[in-house]
Image (cartoon, rainbow, N blue to C red; front, side):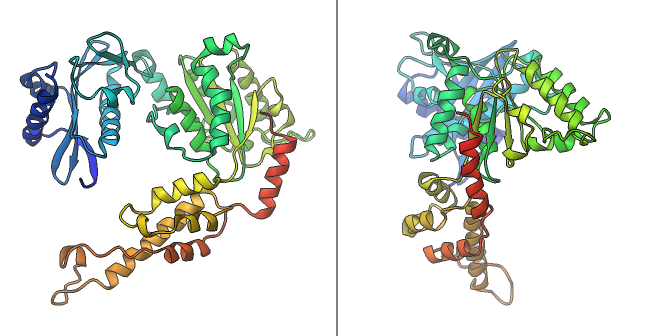
Length: 439
């Protein structure tokens, strides 16, 4: 099977829907008839998975008041079925989210197919009929509030996609995710769920990625506040921050993220007061108020932990001050695996790339990998045969060009990549872990 992409249902997909429905009926009778499925495709909400112009999966839903129902969900079984299941269910949920649904549910026949894919995507079995439902992260009344502050629901699998970095993931799972997602367990052990945490580390080490992954893991809305944008508000930065936090206070659950927080919480230096002193004072008040309510988490991130005001880092405001460093070997391997094309990775010495990229950030490695790919494409286009002076490349003349990518190409790209984090910055980070980190 070639590359799979997800799109909305078109009327000319009906033959593929019929074929999928018939295939599903052989494995276990679908709960809804073919006529009902086709009617929902045309009148309600439907997304399909397509590979090489062939329909290989579909998810069809309809809404009744605050309840959403998946009336048909099927994929052709192959090595990509789990990935297709996830993409289809995420796409259908995004389609139906603006309806303000309270739950999205599905009925399966006792011996029907598709149970594994649904369970892997957050649905739970409720009855022997295999009635599965999943609470929607945002209720109808909260949609406008979330939109007002630029919040969104993130894909559910961001946590799984953070490969490597096992120590950081374990720390965040133990300190943040478990106490917040399972407060009854936290209470049994006398653990108080955190309200605010600080992530610090060199630029490009994945602090934003981890913040989003935590929100995804909790299945809570994610709201990012951008100090540089808020500074241009009519009421100034301090007023814009307070207005944003007032709207956020009406959300039942939320992860609020402020990156480069040093812009709004730098050290106060007495007389004369610095231009940001009023903003720092306001943010200190907001953090204290934010901590008073359950079901919310503030994550701040900084590249310059030493530049933050001392009062901002006190235990009463931030429960943990967590370092996020450069990717370890497992993380670097996962990054290379993500960016090296599937068709060539079998002949690439990934171990050599992992060793050569020590000390680089994920962004550095991505830059090198993409640079090597771009150079390979340029070489292929230069050697592509021409027909009668026409500059059409080989992809449209003699077939697709050969992908000439070897280990030495990637090593050359790495040699030309300038590390974001200098040795001095790396040493300073280790010092900050010892003197400022709080786990």
